[in-house]
Image (cartoon, rainbow, N blue to C red; front, side, top):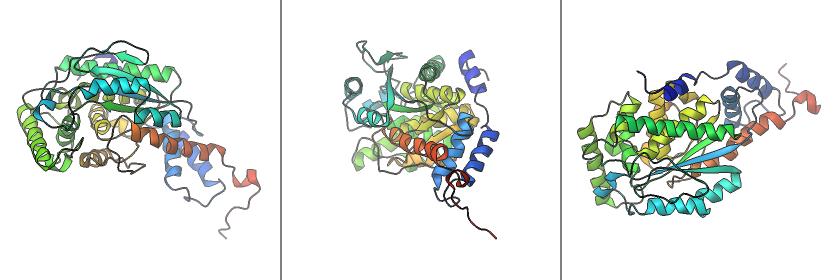
Length: 356
């Protein structure tokens, strides 16, 4: 079913991995100065990168993290330990360079792009901020849909355009980050809807709610699924009914980056929920996704497993913002550099193994 010209064209451009590039990468791995397989996942990751980037010897040329921010009406149900006012306050913290993602992105050499996808108040325009407000906070999913179909489509288009902008600027490794008080609640609803897992299995404490708060959060998510009845096989329907503006934008970022032949690094639970939406819209995207880390939020690994993704890192993170994905950029670049910069046995004059 057609969504929009831009979304349809983008999904259509996400093809299979470059098998010839992957075969060449595997052949080079086999003759590098090391025992076969001794670099573990760096080896398989380098081959995946070759297929994603379409290069026998893949090169990381530019890194970017696109942070989408949006509020959620469901926050009024008491599902978060923090007030909604934190969302715009943290956006300004990102722009001032004072958040965890800023420190980690500086270390990784990754450019940051911040998008107002649906913050509940107007933000003053300033350098580094893209205002693409789809609405003033998503609807309360415990009472009705998060947004209308046209709003959901607009989310995807905003994300696709952002990914195209960063790709045009030279990035070929792109991650998404999030900011939105209450957004682990729609993320759990999305994960339950898409994977079929029980709500209690995929719901965590988010910003740190206590036992009573967790029970109430689970009940809220169950009510959201009962009220909205999203079709877990239809990514757009899930986004419309139980998603969020920033989650939809991140799904669009992933689709757009994949269509441009970029490596897409998935961050934590919210980015994982966005990946599930993108995956339902475009099953081909899974092989172009790299799971940066495994969040403490229990639903994150459920979603990753559904897409067949194995996280690179496990650091007990649960911040969001793209922090885990940016940390994983170091590993992604290391994999590419080992493949490209190590000598072969012949080049180094080192004797290869004797299998006689």
